[in-house]
Image 1 (cartoon, one colour):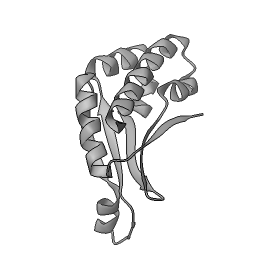
Image 2 (cartoon, one colour):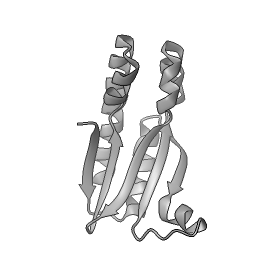
Image 3 (cartoon, helix red, strand yellow):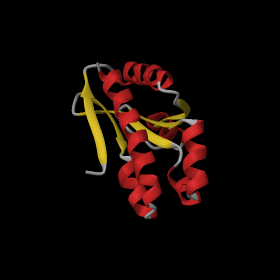
Image 4 (tube, helix red, strand yellow):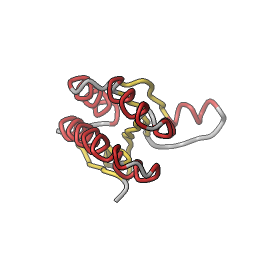
Length: 128
C-alpha cells in the first residue's frame, strides 16, 4: 500500500496541533500548512469538509537524501494530511519507501525506511 492512514477521535485542528508537537519531538518541522477549504474558497470553490495538508521536513535528512539523489527533491518536503471523512478524522502520509521506488536508487531505501518509521511514530503518537 502506498500510504499509511489512521483514525483519531480528535478534531482536525486538534490532530494538527498534536501532530506538530509530535513531529517537533522527532526533529521534523512543519514548513507549511495548507487549509484546503480556505484556499479553495479564495478561488471561489466550495469544499465542505476539513482537510489540511502539512509539508514537513527534517533538514539533516533532507540534505542527506538530496546529496544522494537530486530527484528526491520531487518528493520533498514530506506530506502529511489531516482530514475529515464520514465523521472521522484521519491522519496519513504517502510512504517514503514507496516514493523512493520511483527513483530506483537502492542507497535510498534504508534512509526512506527510517524516515517512514519516524513519521509513522509521530502520527501514531498524535492520534492518541
